[in-house]
Length: 383
Length: 218
Image (cartoon, rainbow over all chains, first blue to last red; front, side):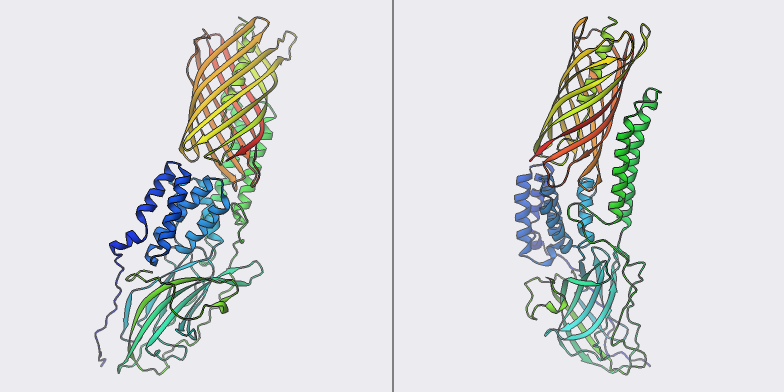
């Protein structure tokens, strides 16, 4: 007879963003900047949106979404001001801040949304969403860490101690670029299958960029601080299987939108070229001047070049890394628990803490020294 | 009156070129651009008096654009001479000046309107025409930010007090491709325009193949 030593509960307290956050995020400033952008007062928009992003950078990660929004408008402002490099930089910051953020296709012209998509595809980044607090009272229960990505790319998710020592590799493989992302679960155990000791831990999600030769290079890391309280109880375990790496086909880069835009480019080219050829017949019933075929050809060639360029993943400005299928999944889940593993059941309370991001230039070994993160409190249940 | 036919037809051709929306400074919202434009005009005249005639010639001109916020102002001038290929062909000297004031209602859509002044000279004398026109233009990217496809449509909304003949209708469509190389303050374009207009004495169809090149600045 199964006797429960404590109430089985799984608490996922949804973040309730405090009203004060609005001021911290500079929402009023962002809105003023957006209005200046809509009025095409680009100088004022640049000033306001830059101030808004600088202000929100000093506040919590709850501002990430608002910051990404401001950065998107700032990038669009730069683009309209003929500063494409600054636009790309702003878009890249927006993608890093909020990987699932997308510019409004109604608000922004196709050139800007295309540029944003190009930058997004070339900027692998993930966001972590976790419950603020979870109690694991029996085997099989876990804390779910949802990873959402800017684009499909290789990612590793690992639990480390506060001192940076590896505790448990949770996931290694490609991340689903869809809206639901990839769910990674941790049951509070280390690589040896035992429940970890009480203390401070951190989850590190490292995004890598895939190069054409198949190698992957770590480019940035998101770190989530966790506090674990483990209390011994007396019940045998019932273990669930570990999360598996996503299917390679699913994890292919999200080229769906790009494909459609590629089709749109060639369609526009062919439509324009066809219009040039057909206009004389439509307007006058005549054959028209043969020189118009040169114009039609220019239209058609431009559309085909646009098709090829978009399918190859090229974008505005510097060509981004070419999206390519990720290799066969090589998910390695060390320390995977099994039904035969004798473990002692414990009540584990895992509480999420601060969240911060680190840019990696030389690989995961460049991990910053453990310690206090740069002041980014995790709002209740948020990311 | 018969001799006014070719001159008016070519004048319409010039007007068609002038009111075609080039993609000058396509990317810059606040900025300016200037350029030169050349066009080959092929004019087909169908009237009860003269039957079916075709005239052609090269037209040259200059244009400029200034943009500020949503406002866009274009000025254009072109002139040239066209001739018929038949034994009774007579040339016509054409000059057209035009101003367009546009409002960018969406980042890639501009509504514009403005006056067009035409001067045509033949052996029969000079004729001056003032018309008001309105239209819209769109521009879509084809290859990165470098190559845009554009299209525009215009129509005359108010007839001229200087041209006594009543027009029964006038409209034109332009499609083309504009190149704005990254990092270079230049633009180039190639376009094709088809216009058709008529009055009580006949119908004119004007084809123009246009090329343009120029500079753009912020």
